[in-house]
Amino acid sequence: MKKNLMITFLAAACCAAPCAAQDSLPVDPRIIGGGSFSDPAFQDFIETSDGYLNSKNTMKVVTDFSGYRDAPISAVPTLRNPVPAVKAAPAVPKREMPLLPAGHYKVTFAGESGPVGSFVWPLGGVPGKYAREYVFMSVTPADKDYARLLARLEAEGGFRFVGEKTFYSRSSRRTVLLGWAPAANLVKISRVKGVLKAATEKQSAGVPLKTKVRFTLKVPYQNHPNKFVPGFIKGLTDSHGFAAETWFRRPWKGADSKFSVFDVTGTLPVDMIGELSRSPFVASIEFHDASL
Image (tube, rainbow, N blue to C red; front, side, top):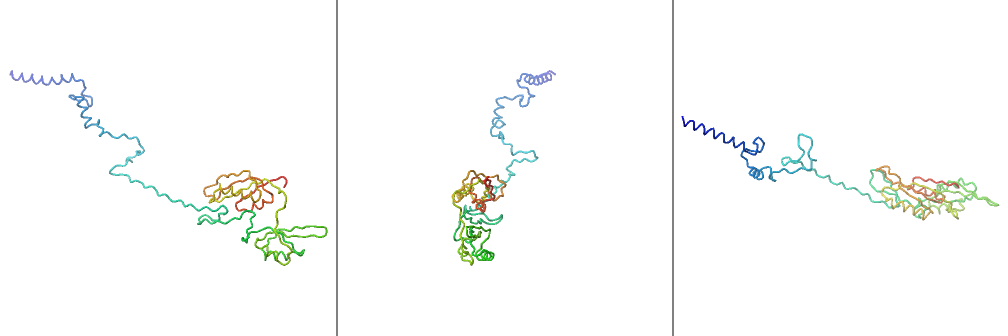
């Protein structure tokens, strides 16, 4: 009996000892991570060696969130299912058309291979070997009735009749035919039957009357405008006495435009306005003078 009582008391003492020890612990065992018999120094050693405090086990900090999206499947590539890299599109070589000389006018159309240009003679230029270059001339007929002569001039010499001019003197009256003809046919026209005299008309002597003009210059897209426009103005100044004031580019109408448009202002002799208007690079001319 005494032995049974001693065993009971010893068992009760053993069970009461842990309870007393728990009351004296500084860490509450109900807190997560705070074990009843855990040493803080030993706990730090374990977590630093193999736990979350080890830098090898720490997830890399993500600062670029452009790869994430609101979708069930992540857009971030993985090792098992890598996203194939998109190859860059090959650069398409831009076909640069050769530049036309400043004296050529672009005559090709959209979709045609080129460039094809037509040479433009300088204003007032009369090349001897260019048969289709027209000059303004006068023809003195032998008879007053020049109807038959005019038909022969048109058929044999390519003469284009534009009018007549009559000169009066004290004892006589002389009629002269005015018109255009190819420069190469001047000798042929002078030898036509019924022609007394044939000559090219020259500018009148003296200081020419000048007027304010503004014309629109149309530059083909294959020419450099910064070179073409000053060159055109210089040629007009040297040959016809043009005095430029301003030139500026007009607003761009679209990427498909085949020309660059410029407005040029200045003063020009009145008799040169018609010559300037015949240039294929000139789209329009405006002039105003109170004396005209």
